[in-house]
Length: 113
Length: 116
Image 1 (cartoon, each protein chain N blue to C red):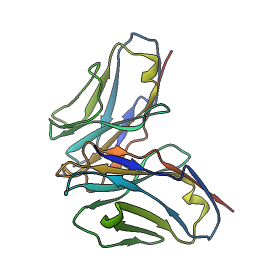
Image 2: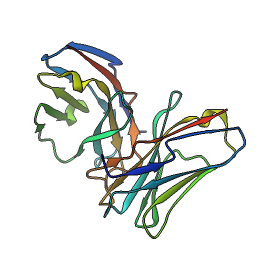
Image 3: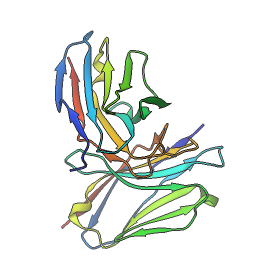
Image 4: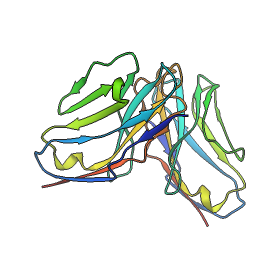
């Protein structure tokens, strides 16, 4: 158990809908990272937050947004969902901004029908 | 532009054999970070190592070792005396961010199967 929790584990929704994925980092970790893993695109870094502030942005679509709350949990919001958004979404956390050691959550599997 | 190539799509070895997973990267930056991750059949991702571009010392952790060679832009991963539990997909990744694990660019992964 990495100490990183993600909810929900599975999500099935329809095109055009909006969903929110939640991540709780390990106690004491200030950085949260979001990744997407799909058959088409492989593993992609989406975005990082450090202590509530956006730190780095990767291949995150404009339809997607994220935030980190004062209690350090993070949410990834996906809107106007398309079939191609079906993927495994991972959250990771680290104590530092550089991710010297990252701990991953179990992932949320999103299926868009 | 940054690029990570894991030319070995799938590798099968018999238990107790040594195996090396190749990773070749491209970057124009002089400061960068390299990573390896493991994804076992259960699906979770496991962080294995982070190495910065200024540290070319090889790293050994138990049965795992990493060989970083800037001259060939490679960061290869060797598992000695492989075990069935090593069966997984292994990803190499590169970050050009100055601080580390941000804006990671991943290779396509190598699926390792260890046969008992």
